[in-house]
Length: 314
Image (tube, rainbow, N blue to C red):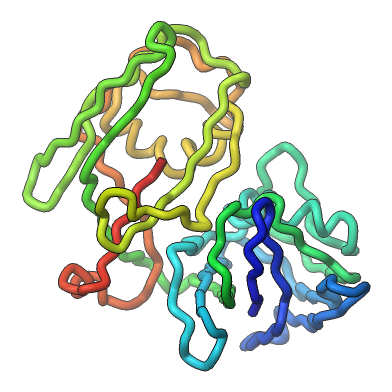
């Protein structure tokens, strides 16, 4: 649990409490406590004992809750949620992006990751934490004052063969091209079947694209979806060059669908190396599918909920 003090940039937080529940101490154990190495500095010390190799049969899920007061049951979910990821996915993104740099300075036997994608397993080890201070430099620049609670769930889902899918409607597509001599886009929304929204159009890449091109993604949230009611959520993918974008977000979330419904898609084996050669990428009824691993069946009831939220990606 943490209390936020908005300061831009960056905001700061104090860790107030840590609780954990372990159902398999024969495989995984930990002991972590809050320390104060100096005035106004909050750190974590302790150990994490991984007693057997961790494969991609294990999953990590993270949800952030918010409360204005920090009391009792006043916490409610925020839009910040990292979907259930297997071990390799977790290490290659959240761990590498937000934890690794800190652990290098304060931990022993931490999981080191180089430029090549990490491939499970995590070998058994005892990770020692010695006054680890986690900063906010890579976090979103805007956070509401108040109290936040982060829940991290680690599970082994060998017996869960099916994953439900949650859906969203694409209401609008907008773009602003400042270099039409280098790239042109024409995208429109179509509805090939009732309740199904797809994207059609093309991306005309008129010259080879190198790592001097960067991508940045953020999600804004609104309860009503009107006018200027959108505000930033904690979900923000840092600025990535072309190689980083192709090798992670594109490869992980887009390539499978693009390969099925697109022409002149980006094709590569192993690790993508620039440039991205000039081409016209044509999309024909591109259907976004995002996986949500909740085990409940409440999604169908959410359509009538007065608190239905709207998200948009920038």
